[in-house]
View 1: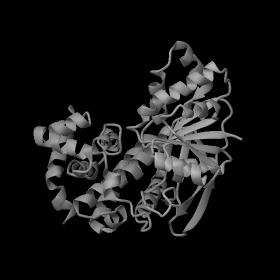
View 2 (view 1 turned 180 degrees about the vertical axis):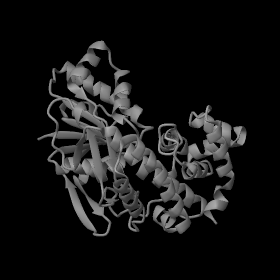
View 3 (view 1 turned 30 degrees about the vertical axis):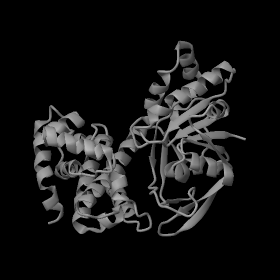
View 4 (view 1 turned 30 degrees about the horizontal axis):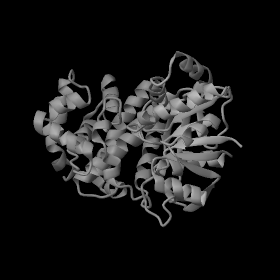
Length: 386
């Protein structure tokens, strides 16, 4: 039987990618450091996905096992696997590189000449390529040559809202019905695996940025506005007419940048924006604004969901005021339980808004942008409460 490893046995790993692999006939090995989750997977050998949307239904995921990702056991799993996927988060991704490298070394030493494809399913641009570079740091020239011949790192874009909803069984997951998984066709090594729900893309960057500039941008800005206004969840926040109006305007601005860059159909893209906003309104998901807004330093990176669409739209001389307002809201995100938020607020207290954003988002040359963000930073609370 075909074997797959899913690094990350959290909600995304279980509720999205791991489930699709199982549905496609793979035995799925979940690899994680959470001993409770891994023990439960090995004990039950199944779990349930609760699809909560306009129509609600349950799907059972079977043919699974678990392994601690820091144990020696994972190396044998890598040696015998046909595909590896990840859903560990961009910050954690480099930490699993040495383990994957050691597994590739074992494949080489034992004479494995079958192809292995590794797909990093993270909310980051070209995450698989980033992982490949991290893995190569642990390999010598011969091992890198082996990797280049037998191991593929297709980039992808993933889209499914999987909130951390507690259930009686710690393995069960609540998800929305919608999902999208676009994978770079040309980057596969060997025969491309047939995986249910995986769409092969020849222009992946367009898909990646469509998702980043629409779902991720809108989701983050909704969370920051909602947090500042005292809401607990995304669906509560987006039902606020003031917030919904500002979020939609920001998504239209980012969308205009996409339309100009990739020649998207304007009418179709605006329909896509409306679909995304409809997903935010799903009352069953109860997606916490603190979860969606967490790690603001990462979200304010020049290549992430707030700054990248803003600068893309600016490059085409398009309106960006609502995107700037969203950045102002992110800079106001003050959550003592979020270490990045604490670090951001400390930086602002020490250096001020303009210098802090210039450093975090690499915008030192964009003084006009920095001045406008500083203005919105000071006005955002009154604007969203108007």
